[in-house]
Image (cartoon, rainbow, N blue to C red; front, side, top):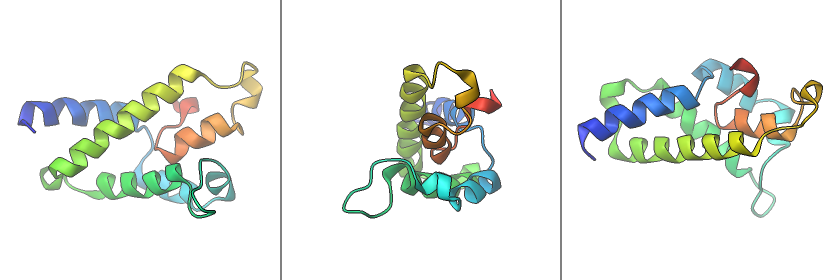
Length: 114
């Protein structure tokens, strides 16, 4: 990947992931985090696993990010943008505890933080 691609991907990732590493780590430990998402074979949900990967990337220095990290950042940006376009509950009072929001939070984005 070219370095200009890296710069754009990094910018989009930082816009999509609006939770800090520590906030995301704390959320991933909750029952709410583990209650949502697709689980293959009864194991860990895809989004929960993604959240752990996102935390790893957030802890890295920008200079230490690999091409694989940048490719994964693109995946995260795509997921967050698609999920946001789907929209959450029409009743804004129900957004806080909705599976829509909790799934987004597993991917490092809290829609109530916007």
